[in-house]
Every structure is written in structure tokens, then in C-alpha cells.
Amino acid sequence: MKPSVLVTGGAGYIGSHACKALDAAGYTPVAYDSLVFGHRWAVQWGPLVVGDLADTALIRKTIRDHNIGACIHFAAFTYVGESVTDPRKYFRNNVVNTLGLMDSLVEAGVKRMVFSSTCATYGDPEYMPLDETHRQHPVNPYGESKLMVERMLHWYGRAYGLGWTALRYFNASGADPEGRIGEEHDPETHLIPLVLQTALGERSHIGIFGTDYPTADGTAVRDYIHVDDLADAHVLALRHLERGGESQAFNLGTGTGHSVRAVIEAAERVTGQTVPVQLAPRREGDPAVLVAEPKRAREVLGWQPKHTDLDGIVATAWNWHQLMAEFRRLPFGKAVA
Ligand code: UDP
Image (cartoon, rainbow, N blue to C red; front, side):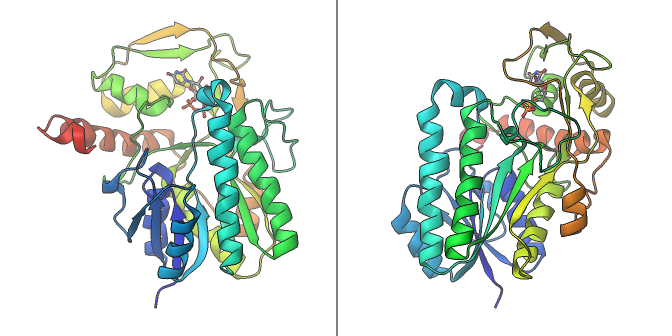
């Protein structure tokens, strides 16, 4: 029988790609998702349990019913701006409800947890590229909530023998190259989907948030990592724990940065469209450059991103956004999406 893995947030963007990767690696992914932000259509590689992260009774039942041996925990609120104006929502869901999940796992004897963390736990960078030993000093409640869980994992590991990895994502991007799943957020705040929706004519322009950064072209630089590469890292992190590997954090990025303007130019090449831009002030809390040092994930997990070309990453996203645009034009498309 295939081992079952509980995937909270399994109907979300990164979670659904992780389910696909788990299935390919011989696991049964059991998606647990409230469907508040997740999509039923994104769950294609295993069963779906519809439930809230706060519902520990249902989490415990799911662990029993599906003979869960490990958990990959994605379910969380992820809007940085909202976390500043409504921090309690973030601490309640991302921290308190995660504590309930961790207790349920420990009580059921589940000893492995792969946690979806973020480079936002570092805060304002002191040097570049960022390695895992960089000081963690988040500058918003979202990053703080993720760091708090990392600390909880550390102490649960020591006290209760919970093996864990915290995967600190840089900028998740792209979509399933076969067009089965992809990014669909409401509201959408991320650069690549917004640029592509502009290319589709669904938005009039893309705002460039800041043109006076100390970078080559004045716009902010980020490390865009393909969602399938992120998904593969989760499987490798799980195998690492199965081997009895040390509980630790890993940066997941390519190690190469691209500016906002470079992303827009890539989108223009891929789509063949001109993308109208509007210059805007910096977005509060956005550092000039965020690029990963991914050496630890390479050396310890054997992880190597396959999608290293920005145009290639944007092309998978473009394929997906075109499909979604077509779907939204269908009579019931909007309601289902
Ligand atoms: N950005 C932008 N215009 C937008 C959205 C984002 O210029 O409409 C910039 C943002 O300031 C950042 C980069 O694009 O420098 C990536 O932003 P995103 O929200 O995709 O990811 P983040 O790095 O904030 O997690």
C-alpha cells in the first residue's frame, strides 16, 4: 500500500503541485483544505477532505481514516499587506491553528512534518544571497507567524521527537507545464500573474512598485522559483526525514535574481504582447533584492531546480493564464474557478 501524506492546503497553488509530485513519487496525498482560497479542481492526485485548520477533531479523524504517516503543511493566510492591518487573523490561523495540527500529529504518533515557510522570516536582508543562517527578524505579521511556527517545530522536535523541515520559499511562480493546475488567487497580488493578466487585456496596465532601488535598472529584484521545483523539494524533504535526516530549514530559490522590468520584458517576449506599465512608488516593506543561497538544499536534499530560465517559467504561467481566461469566458466558468 502507498504511504499516505496529509497535505493541508492541498487545494492551493503550491499544495496542489506538491500533491502531484507526491503521487509521482509513490505516495497518496490526502488534501485537507477549507476551500476558502483553495479550489476543488486543483485536487487531482488523491482524496480531498474539506475542513478548516481549526477543526482538530476532523484533522484527527483524517489522520486515523487515512493512516497518515507524515504531514506537509501549507494551509495559511499569505497576504503580507493584510497581515499588517489584521494581525490577529494571521496569528490565529497560521500559529494557533498550526499548533492544533502539530498536537494532533504528535498525539497520533506522526513523526514527520514538512512546513511551508518563507524568506519573509528573514526581514530586511543584511547580506545577499540569503543563506539559512541569516538573522531572522520579520518585518510583518505574516513573516512573524511563519517564524513562530519554525520555533514551535524546533521545540516540538526536541521534546516529542517530531522530525521537521522548514522550507523557506522565495518567489513561487509558473504552473504545471501540462496546464492541469496553476496559480489562481483572489485577490491576485503577485507580479507574474498580474503581468500576464495585463497581456491578456484583463487589466489595463501593470504598476511597477519602485524605480529608485539601488539595482541595475532601479526596480526590485526577486528570485523566481518554479512551483514544480518547489513541489519536488517537498518530496525530497520528506525522504530526508524518512532517512532520519536532521530537522532543519532550507532555502528554496534558484540563486538568481530578476528585476521587475526583466519579468515584464520576459512576459512581452513570451506573449508577443506589449504590456503597458505605470510607474508607482515603492510598496511598503519591499526590500530591494531578495535572492536565495540554495546550497544547503542542493547538498543535503540533492535538490536542483529544473526550471532555471525566466522565459521558460513565465511560459508555463502564460499557458495556464490563457486556459483560465478561456475558461472564465464559459457560461459557468467564473463560478467554478
Ligand atoms: N510588484 C510590482 N507590481 C505589482 C506587484 C508586484 O512592481 O503589481 C513587485 C513587488 O514590489 C516585488 C516584486 O514585484 O518587488 C514581486 O512581488 P510579488 O508580490 O510577486 O512577490 P513578493 O516578492 O512580494 O513576495
